Image 1: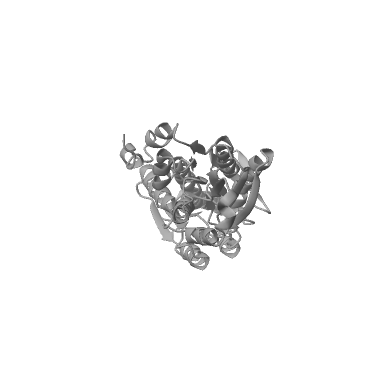
Image 2: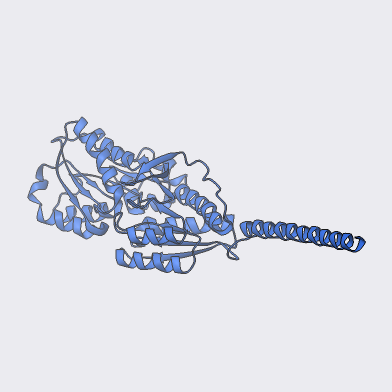
Length: 360
């Protein structure tokens, strides 16, 4: 009996020891899981950025500010910038390249709001968050859309023309491409102001790919129709520059009022010279800086497996299928009366640059 009792005790001791070992093993596994949840998947943050085209002046500025802000927040972060040169197929290839490279977050200035569906699906499948920068990517459920209040951009353009007095109450719209979702928002704001003030829009031409020469070609083919036109709403300042040159060739410069957006240097010079009524200033520094902050948060969520929320993002906007988080900044109408305080004091352009062609 003693022998049997001793065996039982030994069996109990072995069982207890095995239980302790299992418990310790389980605790170690939990510790490993916790460690995996906080250890980064890579040794530094990788942000992939695909830009429409640096041929448009403002995109270079946006990119420079974005990269500078990322480095200021995280000196070890890498920003891989790709320039699509206005070609949608190139942009798709770039996005796929950035996905394969293991980007922690993608920041995209899209060329075609409807053309990136498959690429966005691949990003989702790879677990990579996407920020749609300035232009909404439709039907793709991006993680953030950051831009300006684009409907207000159109409203400001319209109000500036109405305030400048339109004798015949006829205007022409030379807009950007329909593939850019911002264009329809701008047109909505502009056409409402025209409608509310009984101003006739004689036509609305869309320059494919934001190519200013297409707007110029349209004007050359419709010179006669311009005789009674009071003003032209230009989709951006690059189009406005080409339009004014074309009008000069037809001796119509100065007779037709011009508005644009982006506060390009030439446009600001024209504002103080009196050849452009206004331009819409969109503080790209604020946009790019906030985008950098959001990109780092989303990218680190990918790296560390966290779910940190985006601070100050309280709005949503429909991309056609989903309501996506939306962060926007108010644009500012710039004219000869406030250009010093809005453009020069902000450091967007210097006084010497803006007033280069103005003599005392």
